[in-house]
Image (cartoon, rainbow, N blue to C red; front, side, top):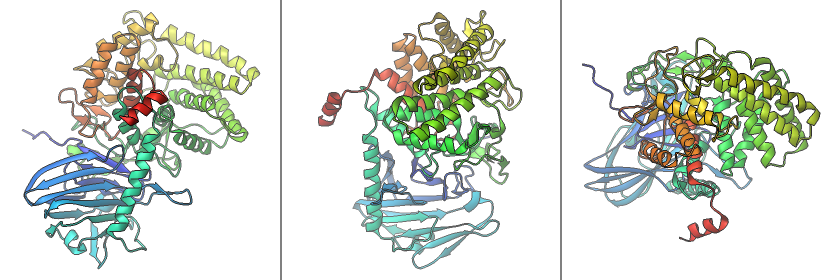
Amino acid sequence: MKKQCERNLDYGVIGNCRSGALISNKGSLEWLCLPKFDSGSVFGKLLDVDKGGSFEIFVENELHITQRYDGHTNILVTRFESLEGVFELHDFMPRYKLDGGQYYTPPDMIRYIKYVSGAPVIQFKYDPRLEYALHDTKIEIFPSFVKATTAKGDYDSMYLYSSMKISDVACQQSITITRDEFLLISYNQKLLKQTVERSYMKLARTKAYWLTWSDRTTRFSKYNDVIIRSSLTLKLLSYDKSGAILAALTTSLPETIGEVRNWDYRFCWIRDSSMVIKIMTDLDHYSLAHRYLRFITDLLPEKDEKIQIMYGINGEKRLTETELGHLSGYCNSSPVRIGNAAYKQKQHDIYGILMDVIYQHFSLFSVSLEHSEELWTITRNIIRAVQRNWKRPDKGIWEIRENNKHFTFSKVLCWAAVDRGIKVGELLQQHSQVAEWVKLRDKIKADIYLNAWSEAKQSFTQAYHSEDLDASVLLMETYDFISADDPKYQSTVLAIQKELEYKGLMFRYRNKDDFGTPSSAFTICSFWLIKSLYKIGRKEEAIKKFDDLLSYSNHLGLFSEDLDFETKRLMGNFPQAYSHLAVIETAIELAGGKLSKEEMLLQIIH
């Protein structure tokens, strides 16, 4: 009998909006790509226990290991207690503002060892495997650093610095901790001498940055810690250089162990990113919205430029999908994929989701004339795209890889695109142009009511003339297509709950797709159901479900894409932007409103 894989996504995430890393609850570094998010991995044990590479720490006579974040920051603290003593490992990637106003975000990771008591004895296993471990990695020990280079294939290299004897670190020798120490991993060779003092300064400035950022987050009457941790996670998934937002930090973590639904999520989906930007704007993090919309305007400089569903983090349009056959995959769930062939798909919902963000931008901010004209051009281009495409089938929000369908969610978001376009036009006093759009909006809405409603199910369905249900339809109310007190919406919510909920979690849909019948719970859909139940008046049920769902996060409050129905084990790429934006949206809905300035002051005092 094949042994069941017992790995779980018990990882903390750190990053600096250039790249990110995953560290296990035992302090093992098992995922890091340098110099940026979508580069080849330098530590990839996450995807192959034997070949992937890791940077591990072993403590003699270990008694206890605990892990937490350092308050409202993205600094991960792993505390080791042994018979001989106690120390803490503070893992972070430097991020802070320099005197000139620019941000310092090097392709570095620092492991700062904070001495606590006694004389604990440790060993390190430093085992980098560059470029997805495609070839062997050569290790050279120099007096002040260790250099790792690719032995074959494309050239790449990485450096390790430490206050401890570098050969002892590299060769797994015993080291006694009696003071603060540091380890620094860098893609670049350092020009200045690296010291404990310099690493501590970077730690202190990075901590100050994250605390300041978190302090700007809007406060609510409940769930503030949950909202802040999820917002910190979403911030980590933003790429400073371009303004892009990643769907997740990882590639090829399976939706279900042993199956093949394994995809590379280190890209910017227009849908996911726009949803993230909208919720982060609601939390008063406006710079993310400004940078993202600049990313969009840079992607679409020409009026006939077709909008793709996704792009590389630097705006790359071709995201060729390949398989890394030499890696066994997470829990032997192959294939491991890099790139994503879904970039070629047509998904008509992106028009409405992007227009929703553009409308929010005009509603909240004073926009320069030049930028207003750019966004108005994009608005008109989007409406033209809707006019051309709304009657056509597409791949839908779930990126079905085979047959196109007339997906209800895609139709609703085409309606939303026109609706938001009308609102933008009215704000800009372009009344004559939007008059014909009103007719289009009404026509799309009538078409949905005619073709997407099932009398038998008493519900809007997944696609036209279908009896299958789909969790994405719950968002009809979110995008103002229908009101929460409309009997058709209320019956839709209850029908979807009855058909798609199982053991307290939600399927996206239950009908077969390209890869068979879905077998895992899609995390965001469970949050959508909770929010919908709350809105139709089933508030106690919604609050209970929300509290239960929050308990299924890992030990640090982080969520992946999926959950196992039976064990509630985290599955799929991690941490997932989709899931964390849904955490925030649902928490805000259930919290019942923002705190007033007086309430915030009282909260600070107490």
